[in-house]
Length: 82
Image 1: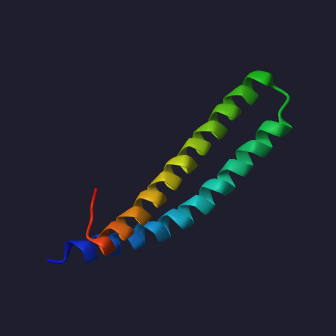
Image 2: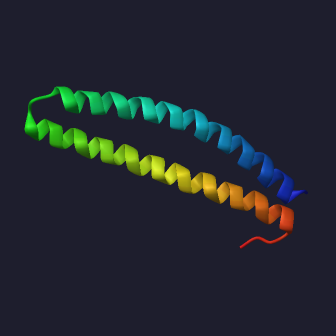
């Protein structure tokens, strides 16, 4: 069984899903940010800031995942997996 080929196909599939998911996440983030800007309740603004921060952390995690998938592809071509 070709494990490298299987891993590369899976990696490419995941990268496509990350792109779609990232676009959706960005849209939801903007909506929450707009709600925060439009609200006058300071405690509710604080809660919305926490939600925005959580979205930021998800995006950071997706960026890390994308980078690791790229490194997987490079490693498969070189024959080196760390």
